[in-house]
Image 1 (cartoon, rainbow, N blue to C red):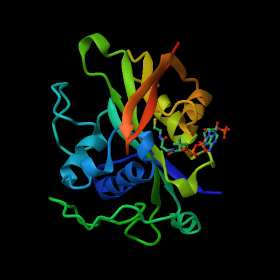
Image 2 (image 1 turned 180 degrees about the horizontal axis):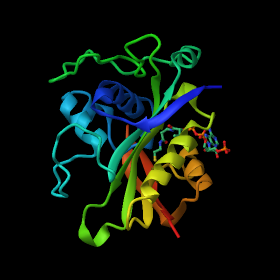
Image 3 (image 1 turned 90 degrees about the vertical axis):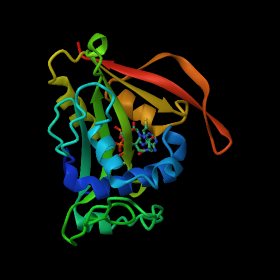
Image 4 (image 1 turned 135 degrees about the vertical axis):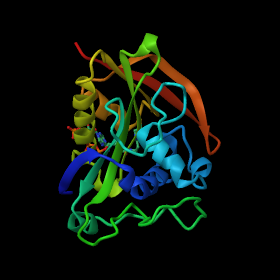
Length: 228
Ligand SMILES: CC(C)(COP(=O)(O)OP(=O)(O)OC[C@H]1O[C@@H](n2cnc3c(N)ncnc32)[C@H](O)[C@@H]1OP(=O)(O)O)[C@@H](O)C(=O)NCCC(=O)NCCS
């Protein structure tokens, strides 16, 4: 059983461990995400900082690039385990190599599952990102992206804990009424069951053959949660 030390917003100081866990997610759970390891592994560290803060310069007014996770409307939550708990659940494989050249790599970059640079530092074992819709006609909606818990820490309630805190924080935003997400492999995924546990419901029918991952078609489903 993993001892969850904390769930908190990630900041620019977390970007190296965020990068490692994000790449691990895309490599080890490829059929759960539309993004891919191959597309991101050679991206500079600034790219990961932007996606962690959801600060894509998409004209929604938040692309200030100041590196502070101070936005109430776009943030990534990270779950941390004590180093001791993480050590007792070593990764099944060190899937993510950070040896690939990374422009602008930050000091303190870590390999593997995102272990802390200090032995007693909590270890990042789970992530989820929230982004509010920036368009004036859709500001009542927010989206969940890139939810992942390291395989060796699953089944201990960590995913649900991140999700509940993310919902609680999003819920406090003025005018936010709904949360939305896409889930892949909706017939079999643990993710769908986790989302249903916290109140998400499927909208419409399953989109068949939405993605083709390693030559295999993957279905997708849209889920939402209304705050009423
Ligand atoms: C989905 C994921 C985040 C769940 O993380 P987790 O920490 O194992 O989840 P929890 O332990 O909090 O479980 C939450 C609920 O999900 C369901 N669940 C989780 N894992 C399950 C499994 N292997 N089989 C069946 N149900 C499962 C259960 O209903 C559970 O609630 P319960 O314990 O009250 O029964 C994790 O499996 C993961 O990272 N999967 C790969 C990436 C992914 O699919 N991301 C979602 C993209 S949309």
